[in-house]
Image 1 (cartoon, rainbow, N blue to C red):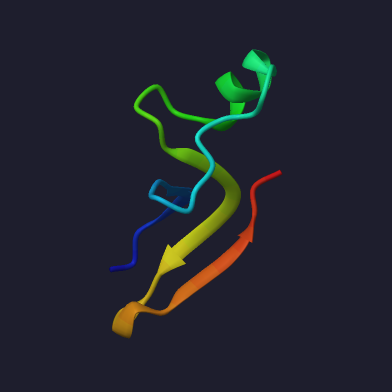
Image 2: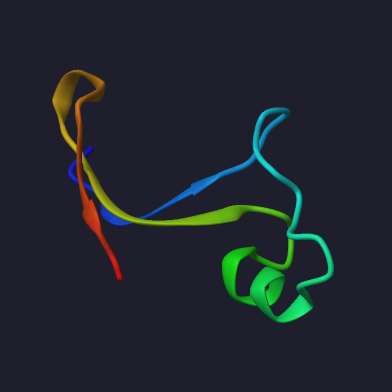
Amino acid sequence: IGGHGELLTRGPYTLRGYFRAPEHNERCFTSDGWYRSGDLVRWHNHNLIEADQVS
């Protein structure tokens, strides 16, 4: 709680990569498959998330 950083997501409904775009995949995904959303988030009490854009 109170932590902040870029929102990462991974799961059955998250894309796994961009077709024929390795440079885009490198920029948008971590080495272990998490998608970088580009959103800056801060966790508050009661699971409330405050969001803003990173870029």
